[in-house]
Image (tube, rainbow, N blue to C red; front, side, top):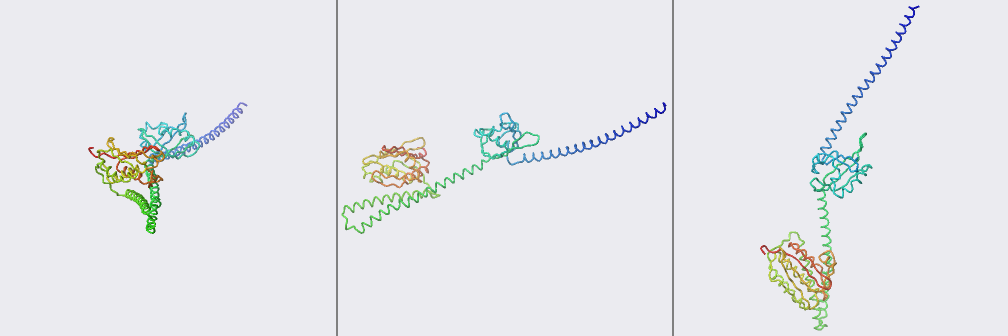
Length: 420
């Protein structure tokens, strides 16, 4: 009986042992499978890591070698203002920072005051996945500014916080060209307006005295025997005035045309101002006497450095205007005084004067400024714009002080001759 029990126990042990070996074999196979998967996973991760490193290397190359300033911003800050966490060489050079000073700086440090006020709004737009393309003013480390065009967009990377990527470039040269184009365009518009006004004067004001002259000469030629001597004298006087008006207009038109021609030369030299003023008064004295107006020069001496013909034209126009707008028996005075390196000449009358609006418009050739004189004298509207251009070409300035009913004072300056 005892022997039988021993055999039974051995058999059981063998069966248990066999089962255990089988289970161990299964476990071992399972471990091998897992190990293989682990090896495969490690290889995949290693490969993925290598690919990631390669992609990062490529991105870094593109980032650093870009022709535009590029930055990566972190918008996840307590105050909502993004900070710079990466920047390429161009960005550092453009803003004149070292990398140590630049990285970690709030993006608002690069904006002018107007840009600082817009930072939060612009950041929110980008976080709402709205790409940003703007022009603004950036401030360099040394405080200088430059116009800048910025393109910025939100970047989402799985498992990473949201970032903002920006590319920008200095558009100073473009803005300079745009400004030159705008100035050129405005200048061209002004020239068109001036030429339109010029041809309007030719079409209207130049034709008007011709019509009067032709009409009166026709009357005289056809009906001279029918008119009394007094009537003929009256017609001749009117004819003479129309001829003078026509001559004044034609003279100013020719002067203005000459000034507009490219290559017109100025002959600047030392001029004795008193002699030139007296010469102008002698020419206009008969016109002044017709209205009983006295012409007075309070210039004893003084030398200016300018184009003599231009200054003579200015004096004739200004004194003629003063006579035109003075009442009978009044006085027109010309005076001068030194102011630093200039001589200031003043033509004063006590005539009808001008309103503030007239004073502001009177030098504009593109506006109607002609006014009838106190004795019905007609004007052309060309005289004062012509004077302004001539004075400015001689490095001077011209301006008017006037009030309605209190007369006018027209001032202009010219450089003093060397050593004066």
